[in-house]
Length: 365
Image (cartoon, rainbow, N blue to C red; front, side, top):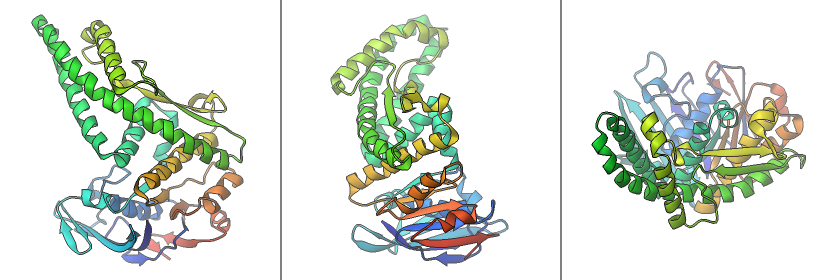
């Protein structure tokens, strides 16, 4: 996939304009708070989702204006395509190749991105919920049915937790718990199997990228940690039985706490560099390199699935990386269209082949 032209009107602080990027690496540089990330955010919206910064659509409208409009020309699946996103009066409109669509999901079928933002650093640093969120988001892009299974699992968890709170006052409700446990085990096994299979393949690509980024000085390892003991050798039927057994054994604790303590919603990923925990012992640069490797591996898996290479968006990724790691991202991420933001003018000077955009007070040059 290649972005050929991006036009923006009343979007964030960007002055109305359009850019024509190159097919390879596009460096967007300027001081902080000038609009660099806003440019990446505009591209990301064409994936059919929400802002990767968690912003609401009405927050994307330039101050004192009443609407925003984005238009993008791009190559995808062997043809030139055009998409338009506009938002006004709390209503979003989507057009694809001149035809109005009733859902942003139509965009996901023709355009995809992988984004790295500074917030992604918490993937290594903080708790397991963020690692599960990354994993679930990546798999949802990879397998459509996963999103439905995940939504069903979360619904059952909420219902089971509500039941556990009611059992405190109504002991007779205990007899209904095995019914919920069975549904939870069947749906949870689908999620576990998908996660374990995805990490198994993701690790292969991530290890290669990390080897290249670190100039073969470091080895990355990723392991899925299942609290019911599920492994990559288990069939989905075996995982279902392991979950049933785990839910039964944890019932006393669940009664006491009032929520479900076991299951995929409590699992984690273990990320190691040279056999040591990246969270506890990794430097800022090592942690950033690990997350970058995961993101680039995610892009490679999307390419393998769709036959189209997603656009890669790297926001403020070069800080805290040594010159060799910076050189890899700027000059050796081959065959992908890349947009990378930075503050240092020296970073753009490292670029051997590509295009440079300068942003100042929302004006793109």
